[in-house]
Length: 291
Length: 177
Ligand SMILES: Nc1nc2c(ncn2[C@@H]2O[C@H](COP(=O)(O)OP(=O)(O)OP(=O)(O)O)[C@@H](O)[C@H]2O)c(=O)[nH]1
Ligand SMILES: [Mg+2]
Image (cartoon, rainbow over all chains, first blue to last red; front, side):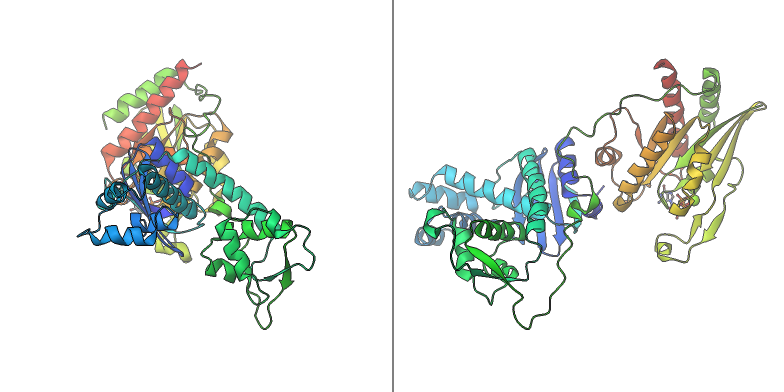
């Protein structure tokens, strides 16, 4: 009994709903254009996620700024084999991080991976019942509802963002007379990174690539900068053919991305009685039983 | 003599012809045709008009089974076939999740004709890649009281069970009124 299929036929939202309602335990693997996502579940909750095999604690703690590189190096040297639990304990014992830092990094990573996969329009998936997460990983159970809800909101927001900024193959430049002073708006690390790449030779798509941002993130940041009057679109970079932009429609590939409801709204009524005598039905039953 | 009618429906290649063939006392009168287009990778022939099977209970009671044609361009026949039916069976190829959305649409269309009792049969459960009936129920968002039954259309006992479950559902529907 393997559950197999494609996301364009059965959306990840539907699959997560299934995992939740059937309280499934096992691993869901999705292979898409952007790589391979593995999601591990225990009794309907997600406990571990990885994108292209990432998800080791050392990298997560670094990525989310919870630990310094030299601290990590010191502790990693003491480990004979990769083991996140051991690594975590040692980092805590050394006073570098707290237990909450670990939980934060893992939770954030898990929901990032799921959110990324939720934005995929197609990919092959299969579910392996009872397959446990890699033993060297720390598992942190997370409710699926909140992640799926956020995924739903993102899909809606993405549709709006695509309307406002349809083409990512255009370059940006700083406006001559910005209406807002840069120092007056609060910018995140990712936003600063985008700003550092702004240059009439870089398209938005290239900036996204250099700074490791996905479509949703880059659109959101660029639009924020545009709305604040800091940057504007230059137009086509010279000598570059204009590739067709992915159609903004087709979010969720037509599948109803129902939120995690309890399995569909029950219809208002049950069937009416048929137009034959009840006895006729009884005779049919008796006969077919004896076939 | 009284005749009653049941309809067997479902997406292309779900096993409708097979299902009727397994239980019918007459060779199924179906209008099969070789497939030449891309769908021929799934199987080599399809039902172009309808399947027709018969179960004679006694001198004055006969059950007819009608199978809907698999291809979309024959949709216009559905309503005609549905007319006056006692109940219907929706067959699903449990191994091809790409057909589940269509199965859901078919269920909705048949339910819109009349409030007729029906069951869903998760067919091809003998194959390794089959989705379990309960998972199909969740993905199709079917109400808890809709029966989603495991089925192997080649197997007579399995087909009997599905037919009987539909008849039990029909019997229960008298009590709701
Ligand atoms: N393994 C297995 N194969 C089945 C089962 N039921 C049907 N099949 C096969 O599935 C294929 C399609 O079955 P059909 O009975 O022709 O399907 P159909 O729904 O009548 O197809 P259309 O009329 O073209 O829509 C055939 O090759 C059958 O032999 C089953 O329970 N198990
Ligand atoms: Mg057929």
